[in-house]
Amino acid sequence: MKRKIHFKKELDVNRQKAFDVVSKFDEYSEFLPGCTGSSLIKRDFPTEIGRLECNILGKEYFIISENTISEDSITINQIEGPFNYFEGKWTVEAKSDDSCIIYFEGELELPFLLNAMASQTLIDKFSSAVIEAFINRVS
Image 1 (cartoon, rainbow, N blue to C red):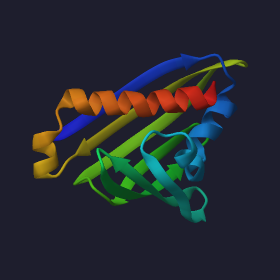
Image 2 (image 1 turned 45 degrees about the horizontal axis):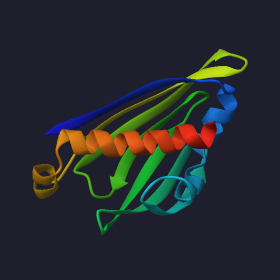
Image 3 (image 1 turned 180 degrees about the vertical axis):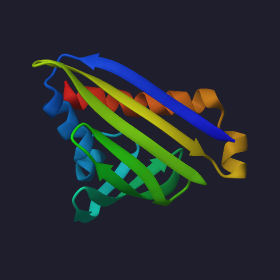
């Protein structure tokens, strides 16, 4: 079963500042909850391959993703990792010189056992914590 994540928030910061936080994949371990490592494996603009390492509920996971960067968005596709399927997209749109709207949309499919244990409420709670970490880093 595919699960969806949606987020939208207006921020009182310059669009470029917000986009820089989202696009600096290799700094995620400095502020994302549960993220124990983040590294850039390959950069061939507009595509980057990155690896995130996480500890969630005492278990180690990693995801390797292909991230395609455009002027105002980053599309994320899992290459290898804990999900049967993961695709996401960050979009940062300027509202004025000093404000922007940040969006995240994602779709994931968990393996059978993990799907049985993870309620949508748990996924929403975890997603909110991750999104809030990005917001705090930007602000």
